[in-house]
Image 1 (cartoon, rainbow, N blue to C red):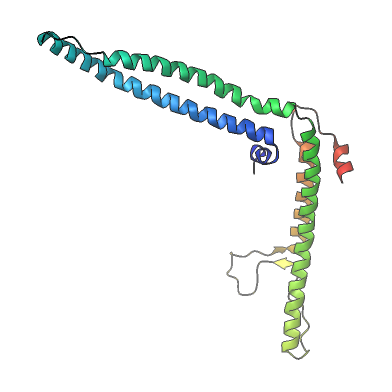
Image 2: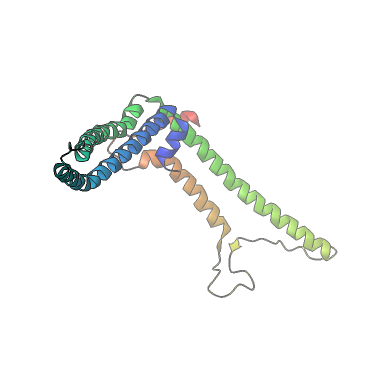
Length: 213
């Protein structure tokens, strides 16, 4: 989930700002479509007006109301509405930074949530290792029972991939222990991201993370 989507879920003022932006963008798109439609209708309306005025002169009748004049008036109003909505969209786009600036506490809260997420990730890694060990133990027990206590080999070892019977080139062996280490390192990298990110803004206060831990 990208930061804005997560912020929309977590912070009501940002959600409201994004909802307002969506409404402004929808209204602007409708205004643009209306302007384009009226511009497309105008040439035919002008041609119709000329034809009807000519017929009225020939028939010695009063000329009908101008369709083109009505469309021009509608077009002028639609163009003004489009310009107004362009301004509304621009203001709505700038609203999220203002909301963030007005809610400084969100940053500290996000660091606390980051610590919780890191702990959840680390627990999941530990659970993965424990679950694999349990699966191996159960498999070994089943073999031991099926051989009436004669076979005691563990089902699992540190090597993943390259199992017996795998086609050459399709399953390259790698270390389960190394996988766990990479996952643990990944958890630490993600938790440290706010502090290591190349950003010209002031660095995060890491004491917040330590206190939340």
